[in-house]
Amino acid sequence: MYRQVIIPSKNNNLIPIPEKWFGQEVEILVFPINNNIKFPKKNPKEKKLEALKAMFNKYSFDSTNFKFDRDEANNYD
Image (tube, rainbow, N blue to C red):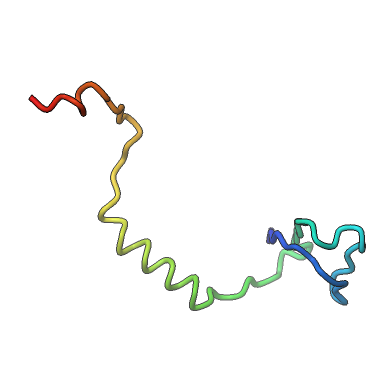
């Protein structure tokens, strides 16, 4: 599936959009109907994003069990 949210301003020859939807957010969904479809390789922006995520991944931490204690944070003694 491919999902894209756009704000159309004029009619598109490839995807006809009703004029009453111009200027509003619309969602375009594309589903493959043939299982033999090959998806395109990742573009350079996606590769850069993956490289950045990998670089900063070592600085991430699991904060699911973290609870902020305001009293403890304000206790300067």
